[in-house]
Length: 267
Image 1 (spheres, one colour):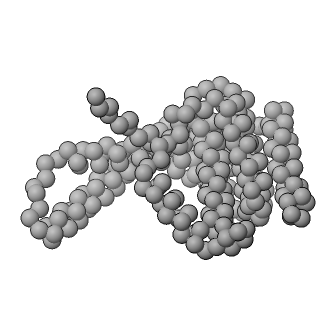
Image 2 (image 1 turned 45 degrees about the horizontal axis):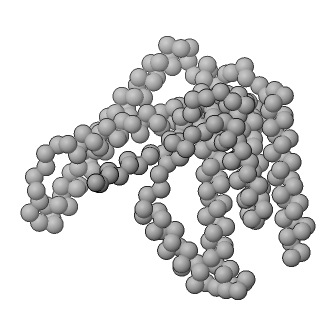
Image 3 (image 1 turned 120 degrees about the horizontal axis):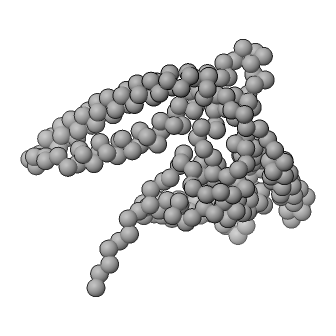
């Protein structure tokens, strides 16, 4: 008796996972501040201890927010093959300790990438897209002193974040409809290349048409709701739970950095 292979889970980003938790209720500015601070930490000190500390923070936040396993995308087979090939290639570089320095560096970079992706995914899964523009306008308010159009940047970012998932769905529908169309069997490689070129041109033209139509609809909706000024305005501010979250993350990252610079640097 054969069983069908389960369908791969797609990447779910820019869409908050339904739920109610402390992580969901945090101010979006707090989450972006944490992401920025952790990114700076891992940029200058990408050691195993800081990576492990950040992974612990991400895992704890995911458990508190009750993120289901179904939100995680499936790993394609070609990515596993690429990781194995990359690890084997890095292992041939040698280095201390005992000739495994290249492999350890590859594993460390891979773990760093996974942790940063998980950190960004946590913000995406627990934050409403509509909260991003007001946060950017609030955090970048000092830049207005040098005549930087912060509000315009915030509005552009908000529109891009809102349109991205919608356009992805539109492109998937277009691609599926294109595959359902009957196609003549090519007789030569030249005809196959010409067919691929025609399909690419048709898909690009349809994608541009859909994008312009969506942009026109979004512009009408923004005008009906009071203009772009309403997008970058929000009464949400930091509260006591945001201060506690920042304190906990700062304590964990500070302890990891101190351990990395003192104990492990002498071994």
